[in-house]
Image (cartoon, rainbow, N blue to C red; front, side, top):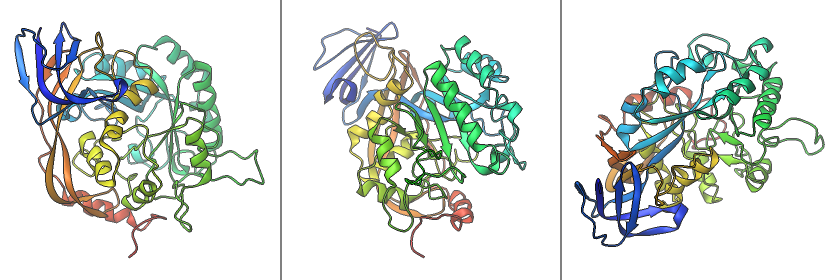
Amino acid sequence: MDTLIRNGRVIDPQNDIDDILDVAIKDGKIFAVGRNLQLNSKSTYDASGLIVTPGLIDAHVHCYQYATPLGINPDDACLARGVTTVIDAGSSGASTFLGLRKFIVDKSKTRVRCLLHIALHGLAAAGCSGGALGGESDTLAILDEEECVKCIQANRDVIVGVKVRLSASVCDNGRLEAEAFRRALSAAKRCAVPLMVHHVESTIPTQTDRASPSSLGCPKDLQAGDIYTHTYNGWRCSIVDPETKEIHSDVIEAKARGVLFDSGHGAGAFNWTVAEIAAKQNFWPNLMGSDLHTENQEGPAYDIPTVMTKFLHLGMPLNEIVRSVTSSPARAYSLNSIGSLSEGMDADVSVLRIDECDVNLEDTVGQKRNVKKRILPVAVWRDGKEHQVVLPTIWPNTNAIKRGLMINKHQIVKDKE
């Protein structure tokens, strides 16, 4: 054996495991999981009192570093926080993908897969990703479905889906939102991959008019396996009706037919009020995505363990939290060699600890909740090789709270003032 991780609480939802067990790693693969394994190994890690899981998968990040304004370094911001695999959510389009592949995917220690933006240039510099007015989908010419499909078909080892942002500000003040949505839906269907939709401040409604069944809606027009991200935002298009404080029926129906919901925390898309309303209705995320980028890695998102911490505070069962960062994203993105600790799987393993704490942790709009338990990364192996883990230097960050308060007034669902 190369490594033997002993006496940890192994949580592996794919295999219905939650027990004190050992995990053995050999030649970059999971060799065995069992109680008191009698095996010789080159190194032993004592995980007593800790949680051992399949390598964490962040279902939504932006890691096209330097080529896009939002791009973070996946090794520094993700692998060093216990995350072995990330999904870059549309930083590149068909005309910029090869750079992502050559300079990020091929050179990162973190496993990087991506969703291809329906816009040719992805998020190179547009709207909220670049500081300028306008957005990546302001012209029809850039929304090239054929090039998107060709790029996916030629790079299926890396590209696992399609991405589109539905916000009026990035689609010529809403004029092209519907067409961007239609082309992205079509490209994903033709390639038999999921479509992830960013749906914030959009002209396309969350809840459609039942008297007009032909009207376009999101998530109404998503198919089973498609992904609705930024689920817990309080902007216009929130999943929560601001009057009734109930989740819209179109949202409930979409989840029932197999549409997946991603936390997509981001810098403006996680609202404690919305999340608490959803929690009361047991509307938990299928996928846990940090939407980590340059504007939130020092708060309010920080990393995926912090996002997990927030859902632990909300009452999401720990096993379901682990599922949302392991087997669920692996299945959603057809990542067949990871997501569980089954024999022969890639030896991606994360070790976590739950600490007592007493902090006022912010959402993305400056609202705070008193959090008593924190999930922390302790150790991580990627393909059987251990990597160093580091923690945020400032947590919580008062500057992130101040930034959030600047956009609080635009929320349609929020705490009572």
